[in-house]
Image (cartoon, rainbow, N blue to C red):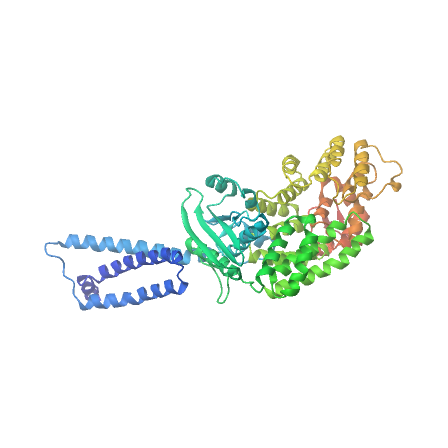
Length: 601
């Protein structure tokens, strides 16, 4: 055996092997970098690597057949130095190659269940954080703005499916639209290492999309491409852009055979544009939901196999009952009976069509919250976050669920994950502030609420001020509530009058009107049980979690006297909370006693 290795050394086989490994590695790096530029198919790179692998034993055989002679005048020491250098380079190359191919996969987290899975997945560290900035509409037609915004969202959604790629600011990036963009400043604000920007031009049936990938630290353009195709090819463009960006970042796509980053394509070009219009309207919340519903209902009839439209329609249906909360119990019940079954049917249809569509599970989970099926809702949100760990809507809805069932610390942890991903979405920031105040962090919640432009922070601020005994400030906050929301001007006027006089007891409390979301003022005027009416009325109508998280206010310290009553115990039984606690564990505010009984504090 010793003679065999000596013969290999004499014929310089080690040197040939090391030199081949170095050259092969360099060639692989070259092909990896030029493949995205020339849009070479993946099989080209695979074939190239296969040829290099086949060539290795051939090179060794040739070296064995042809005895290499040391150049005249060279010493053994010099030959040994060359051998050692080549061997060292080969070891480094093999180590780098092995890390690139197997290191990331070996450290990838395994799927977990429940809150731990969602929290771990959302906070998973990664070397690359990517933000897709709003694509510019250069069509010369302002009415086409929805299409450029839609392309931004769709490309972002495709990239979110790449396992090791952390997508940030899916909604927050909108604030940088039409601004003079300071690359480094954006990267710092959004904690992004790279960003994508581009433009969209529509002309008749053709669309031209330009996209480029840029490093935020120095502005280096890593990749850029133009796509000029028919509108019917828009899904192929989205797939090509997402795939090219992942390749430029050297991120494995993580797709199973037959899977694509853009999976749902069964929709005609005109309907797809209407779908993008509906998505823009949905972001406008109350003002846009009815219009979005009017677009989506006939759209899914024409395109019954397009899963994203079904998910959007389910979200619209699930939100409609919230806009009937200032009416009678009968009016709310009518909305619940009409729209929640529709929402469940639409979301289940979306999941049936595309089992990997996180939005379908989020929409169905929201409907189950509103129906008081908290265990099923948690299961659905967990599934959504396994599919898309950084999905902001899934994180928002899941954290709302945790707050509603009294798991306030876990809710706050998830809200903070959401805030790290989406720092500039007013509605999300207002939700974070609400959970902060539920955790007693008023000094942080107050400025956050005041800075949440585009929302209505005044009811929440009134809750805080009243709990702090600042009744006059609470009344002032109530009087700033804009008209046209879920509380009437009469409710506002009565609530402000009562809280301004607190802690004086209200005269003839039995004659006072129902105050909806403003019922908290009854905590301070001698009739605390009436503070439950808002939640009891909704439950009577079959709506068990108002606006996703309003029920969480029952865990605010100001409700402690109410939680000790038999009336409260009856409510949480009817609401489905006790069933949830018995299955998942009791919150810090309540614990079981003897038999089927429990107490809360």
